[in-house]
Every structure is written in structure tokens, then in C-alpha cells.
Image (cartoon, rainbow, N blue to C red; front, side, top):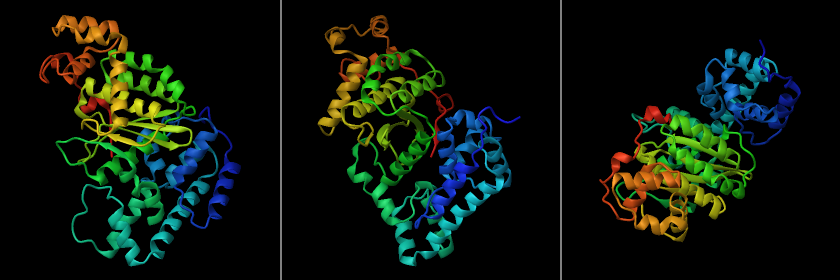
Amino acid sequence: MAPCFAFKAHEHNEAIMIYEQDQKNWFSKPGDSIRAVMTRKNVNSEDMSRELKGGMNLLRSLLDGSCPIDDEIAVELSRVLGASPSFWIARQKNFENALDKIILSADSEEIDNLFEIIPSISTQVRGKITASRKFDEVRKRLVYFGVCDGDMWKNRYGRLINDTAFRTSQAYETLDDSVLLWLRRGEMEADMVDTRPWNSANLEDRLEAIKTLSLQRHPQSFLPKLRTLLAEAGVALSVVRAPSGCRASGATRLIAPDKAMLLMSFRHRADDHFWFTLFHEMGHLILHNASTFVDGDLEPVDHLEDEANNFAKDCIIPKSRESEFLDLSTDKMSVLRFSATLKVAPGLTVGQLQRKGRIGRAQLNFLKRNWSWDEIGAISV
């Protein structure tokens, strides 16, 4: 049986194809066409994934370009989105030809440069790097980051590290490559989230509703609701486990003129850290025009981080309750009662007591909630 959102898409798809073939430096993954048709027909990622045998994992791989469209997938796409299977096969072939053209037209110096400046998707490239292997590796990196040459890389990502406000852990060295890989995966996940146009006032209006989600014990219960609330304000929530070398807790970035990304790593896997980081990133979105920020555990390095920290603190402990908080007895029952009146999980109050130095870092931690990676369900880079 055809899905309820099936439609005739051949005219739209053919127009996309003709347009792309006319481009001098055409570099657009087949997933871009899939996403464009989904958007045009108001098909969300969940509905689309249910129509594919491979589910969300297959959809994710198609959109990011890591899975090529073969005959079987082409038939599925034709059934779900329209157009003939031959169209989708041709779409894949055109992309591969364009990618081959880019690689083959680059001289050895250009390939060496791309190999050096674009991070490896794998942890480490081992063994002898032959010319053929280097070409294949550069090819994979171009696809992952969605760029076609060194100039495009520099414009989109190369200057990001220098232009980004970092607040990383003092205990570890954060590697630029791992941060970029994490951010890029976050962007790709955010692309799968349908949102309304970005509006900071709408995000502020949802602060209280978001705060009360901390009362829910399990991430798989509160994350879908959190995604919905943020999407209503034009913010796509991505949850991506940070790769080795990346010690970031959260990040914000405007990924389209009308769409912001809020990326969370669930570092420490504890409720106080997660929610404080979330509110900190929301502070950047609301106060700092959705500029790019990557945040870890370091103490504030400038007034922007101070402002985001204060915003997060005020989300948990409103200014009107601060004097009461400062006089709060630090026994279990007092903390539980006070947290209940704030409509936040007690772990968040404990975190603020620790940040203020009112209790030690090891005190009252039994009131915090800690999660396993299975409970969180974060994807990896």
C-alpha cells in the first residue's frame, strides 16, 4: 500500500536535476533532493523513516551521503516520494560523477592540502597512505562536510574555530578536528528536524515549559517534548555523543537564516550538568543573536559567557528566589521542598549549591540523576 503522503514528484525532481546539471561546480548530495522533496510536501523525518526498510538509520545515511542509492533503495524512494527508480539512480550517478570530476581535476598538491586541512571522519588513518587511498579519504571527507574544494571548506568551517567562542575543560585539551566533526554531525542531525522560523521571543515564551521537563526522570521521556518545544521557536535540538578529543558539552549555531541548532553532548550524563548547559546555550541563542558558541566546563572567559551563565542560573533559581536560595538549609528535605516550589528536579538545585560553594562537590550527589548512554540514545559521530 502506498503511504498516505505519496505524491507525483517527477516534475519537481526533474526540475531539480536540470538545475543541478547546469551548475558549473555542481556538488549536491542525492540526500539534498530527498530533503527538498520532503520539505516541499511536509513529510517529516519520522514519517519518512517509517516508510523505509532501514528506518531512521537508512534515512540518516541517505541524507548525509554515506549510503549510496542502489536499485533497491531507488525503488523505495520512488514508492515513497515519487519519480521513477531510474531518476534516483541517475541522481546518485550524477553526484558520483561530479565528485569524481572534482577529485580527478585536483592536482597532487591540492589533494595533499585537502587531506591536511579537512578532518578525518575515522579516529585515525592508519597504514601507508598511497595516492589512491588518499584520494578515497579526501572524497569521503568532502562528502561528510558537504564541500567541494578548499575554498568552500575554509569559508564554511576552516575559520570556525577562530571565530567560535570556546569554553572548554581545563582538564583536557580540546582538539579542533574532533570539535568540527561533532559540530558537523550536529548540523546533519538538525537538518532532519522540522522547525518553525527562528524567533527568540518564542523561545523565551517556552522557558517555563522547558524547565519543568527536568522533573521527568528519563531522557527518552523528556527529549521528544524538549525537541517539540524548541522546534516551535525555530531551534533544532541535536543530541550527539562527543568523539574522542572533543570535551564540549553544548553548542549553538545558526544553520540557516531561519533555523538555529542547539547541540548537546550529554557530557557527564547527569541532570544538573545537562540542564544547566541547555539553559546556557539557550541564553546564547536569546542574548547573542544565535551566534556560534561551543561550551565545555571552563569558567567564563568573557562577558558573553558570564551572561549565558547568569541566564542559566536564573532559569533554575529565579532572581525573586535568590535570597531564599542563599539562606536555604542544605539538608536533603530542605533541598527537595525548595526544588518542588521551583518546579525543577532537585539535582539542579544541588548543582547550584555546589557552584555557589555552599556545599562540596561530593555532597548531595545522590539527589542528582545519572544516565547510561543507552538511556540517552545519543548518536555518535
